[in-house]
Length: 524
Image (cartoon, rainbow, N blue to C red; front, side, top):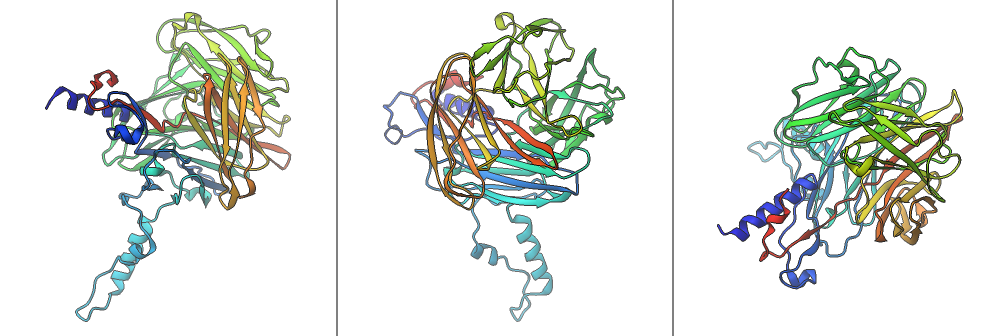
């Protein structure tokens, strides 16, 4: 085997590692509009997503949403299917009604189906039935589930549905611990996650949800770090997550120490998993805490609601080095330094929390955290409260990754949706597209300019003649880097229900050098 072939395999492997699992094929220079020897930017051909189990409450009402934006150059065939994680097999090809009817049971000598055959066929049909399956790019689809039986989901998309495939679950819990609106974007499997902002305190019920999409077991270690360093855990090492299954782990069962602010580090020894923390509070509701961006000397936490009553920052730096974080708020007028919180001191290996009060003071805002020279890596998240005391609701915003090309937020409504965009380092131009609605509507697109160092709550477009929910897709046109989040909000019984999701890049496009090039540079 020659060097070029080996390098091509290595490059594809590296790309798969970056995207959770993503597949691309060597480009056809003419089809890609590229000359031979030049890198071609092509749509991803296969990708996967995992959604955690939404709730253990019998009062929960969950909406799952799936969507793929229209992508130029994508294949004209493909599927995008989400199934319950408990289902052990998933057909690769799209099954129509006729195909399902062809599942025959046992037959007698006279050619008649037995009763057992009928039951087995019906059981198999139900087991293979997807929870969500896309019909066409550009139009979201939804499914609903009530109570504690709503499952964790595992899914794959290929062909024309793979590039930019996004899924979201939004759950409303009417009463009890964690009441309110809980939302989380489904994510790709990985081998390491950081969650600053979790808790083992008696007032909180925090679960780390682990979802394994593969046919072999995954082995996971969970490390907890409090205000004085690593917490002693009893069963945090060597947790086995069975093949194609989901495992919720109650954090307070891992340690005897009760601490308000804890950083969770998930390390996968073998295999890969999806991971998210569900943080539920007795008094202030709850929401999902997605993983923070990888440890870095510069972090952006986008889209703190302008009417936030309290903002609590939780940060952690791995290793032994201390760091003084510089804190700035990207507001509509530019970068400002919060009075009294110019710098925050973090001790190495210890979780630190800081109450920043009503930081945004009625304006859109995003936190920008910087370590001196970017030399000490940090992870961070904020817990946000809205509403008056006694009727407050909470949500979390972790440090986010920038939108390099495109990102999508799902389950939007004509009212109650806020899209917040920040460009902390340089001005940027973005294009925002509102998709067709789940039950009807015509897509609409607008272009916006975001000034350097500012955060803008933009008036996002709404599909003409909207029926149902819709997707908002953000594309960077120039400048940047750009960070964004989306807030869903409603009011129930005087309580301001809300949930915030940062918008990570959808990693739907990859640069693939021509096969004649040496791809060893893609290895990481």
